[in-house]
Amino acid sequence: MSDPNNQKQIIVARNVDKRFGSFYALRGVSATFFEGQVTAIVGPSGSGKSTFLRTLNRLETHDGGEIIVDGIELNDDIQHLDAIRREVGMVFQSFNLFSHLTILRNITLAPMRVRKMRRDEAEAKALALLDRVGLKNQAHKYPVQLSGGQQQRVAIARALAMDPKVLLFDEPTSALDPEMVNEVLTVMRELAHTGITMLVVTHEMGFAREVADRVIFFDEGTILEDTTPHAFFTNPDHERAQAFLSQVRHGF
Amino acid sequence: MNWTKRYPGWTMFGSMVGLLFFLWGVAIPLSAAPDPIGPAAQQFAEGTRITVWLTVISGSAGVVLGVIAGMGKLSKFLPLRWLCDFYVWLIRGTPLLLQILFVWLALPSILPEGVVLSDFACAAIALALNVGAYNTECVRAGILAVPHGQIEAARALGLTPLQGFVDVVLPQSLRVALPALANNLASLVKDSSLAYVISVVELTMVGYRVQAESYQPVPVFLTIGVIYLILTTAFTTLTAALETRLEVGQKR
Image (cartoon, rainbow over all chains, first blue to last red):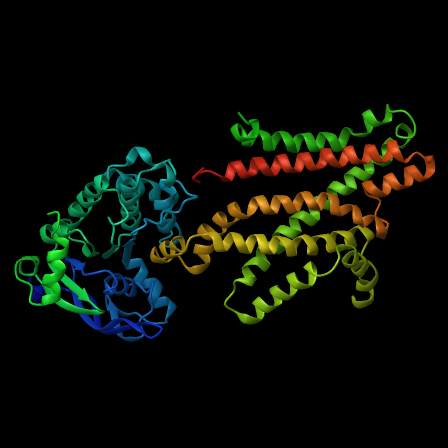
C-alpha cells in the first residue's frame, strides 16, 4: 500500500453486506481507498469482487454497513447518488456503448446532459480523449463497426469525459479476444500513471502485478488479503489465495 | 439491391410526395374512367382524403398513446400499471366496431353538455384508442428488448433515470418496436373503413353509395380495392424506409 498516511481518502467502505435472497454476496467488507491509488481486485468467480465494485456507485444497493465516496454517504438520497455518479466513472465487461449513437455522441452525451457542456466544447473534448486512446479517426462510426478492444477503449474515453475522480473497471478485458487485451491494458496502464484513482476487478494477473499499488483478494464475499502486489504474488498469507494463484498461474 | 434499403431518405421523401400527389390528383385519372367511376371521381377523391386523414390522425395519436401506456405498463407505480393493463385488456378484448359505436352513441351521453363531437372525431378517437392498445404491447416489448447494460451505463455516467430513458432506452426500443408499429399502421388504413357505420364518408362508404346508385358493384369495389392497395403500399414503403434509417449501428 503506497503510504496512505499523507493521502486523501476517496472511498471508505465499512462492514458492507449484500444479500441476493438468502445468499450472502458480501459479508462485512471494509476497505479504504486513497486518491491516486490503483487497486487490483482479484479472486475466484462468484467471490463478490464485481458485486463490491458495483455497490460503490450503487448499481447494486448494499444491505448493511456504509459506503462514503468523496465525503458523501451512498444511500437512498437521489441527490447524493447523482453527485457520486458524477465523480465515479465505470467501465464494464461488455462495454455497454450506446448502440444507437456514434462513437462521438457516446462520449458527448453525459457531459452535455449532466455537466451541461456546450456541444462544440463536448465534441472537442471527446476528440481529444479519442486521440488519447488512439481512435480519433473512428469518431463517426457506430459501436458495432468497431472491434471489442476498440469499443472498450471508447468506453474508457466515455468514462473519462466526465472527469471522474475514481474509475471503476469491472473485468474490462474478460470479454475480449486475446489479441485485443493488450491494447486495452496499454490504455489503462497510461491512465494509472496520470494519478487517477482506479479500482480494477481483473483476471489479468500480469497487469495487477505490474501496474497496481495494491491487491485485494476476495473469497466468498470477504476480503481475505489486502496487500502490495509483491507480497500477494510472492507470499500470500491464506491458503485460498495460494490455491487461486496456482490456478491462474497456468500459462504464465 | 433493394432501392428502399439503399436510399431510405429518398424513399421516405418519395413515398410521402407520392402519397400527397395521389391525394391531390386521384380524381384526374378516375374522371377519365367509364361509368360508373368517372362521374363519381370527386367522391372517390374525397373519400380517399378522409381515409388518409383518419389514418394519419388516429395513427399518430395511437403511437403517442402506445408509448405512454407502454411505459406505464413497466412503471414501478402499481396503480399506473393496473390502469395501463386495464386499457389494453379492455380494448383488445372487445370488437373495434363496438368501440366505434360506443364512442359515437354512448360517449355523448357521458360527456358534459355542450361538448359536441363530429362523426369524424368519434371515429378518430375510437381508432386511436384501438391502435394505441396494440401499440402499447409493441412499445413494451421494445423497451424490454433494450439490454440492461445500456441502462446501467447511462446511470453510471450520471444521467438521471428520465435522461437515460429519453436518450438511451426510448430510441433503441422504438427501433425494435417499429416493424410491429408499422404493421399496426397498415391495419389501421383498412380498419378505418369501419368508420362508415357511423356515417363518416370515407372510401368504403363512397364505394357503397356509388354502387348503390349505379347497381355496378364490381368496377366500384375493384376501384376502391386498388385505392386501398396504393395507400397501404405508400404507408408500408414509408415505414420500411424509416426502419432502414433507424437501423444504423445495428447488427445485420
